[in-house]
Image 1 (cartoon, helix red, strand yellow):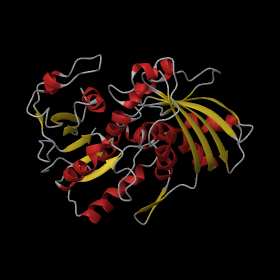
Image 2: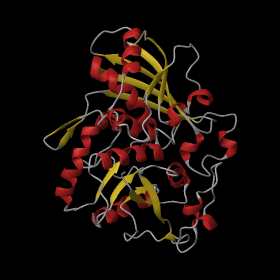
Image 3: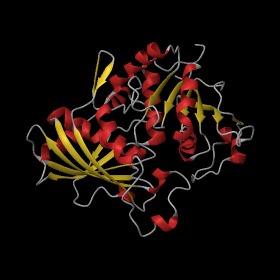
Image 4: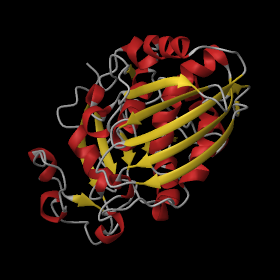
Length: 354
């Protein structure tokens, strides 16, 4: 059985806590090191973390002493839940020191030699790790990232459609959960009885990241997918779960029934490899006129499945649909853990010193 020692950078924040929570009882990964800001370093994790998850802190992790953000942790690779204000140079430092860094942060997502991974969509982009190591003189270390949490759910649904019918353009309108803003996040007087039609930097990410993820890897570089994307992003008063209304212009004429069929039948490399965090069915198609719904569907596939419904003809473009994904499962921590499983299974992550 594979066994890897895991470090969590930014362990006290919202996403850091999700890593700790989601790695409990993981069959391959064991948390052995935690790092955070100087004010947290030197203290037991259970004493300084403001734990915001219903289940208790795993006892063995709560007893760990939080380390400074320095590249000398006792682990084989690191998950990064660092804030973007510090993630850029810190992740580079750890990669140079020989640590694979599986990042949730946005700083390096669009770097030409950094894989922006969604394992069901672009597992072949793992090959960028070899290019990155050569370009930067790394040995065991590298950086791999997962996308923005709205982009993560979107591209899973787009992948089978694009492969079968070629997407030319799309419009996406998001309704994003409060937890996507971290903790304490959006002030209560702003979020209650309200919809906020702006999230800083979100529309730009949603218009650029899917093109890289769906792009083709040729001769060590990614040619972005030729898809025009228009995104409008909104913060809505739900706790977890990002909903997206999508309209698609396709190069091949197709019926809603055909779209629903390719979505239903889609499987990817994580399913073939039977990775621990992979849902058996990455896309669940609902036929009811009023699904997906956030409360009812966000935990599908233990939060790792994308739920698609209301697949129908569009009177302006060609096809429209609604999708829902859990922003902390299919996005953020869950996405990074699945990325690490793929990279470990394919040999890019190895035990340090092995």
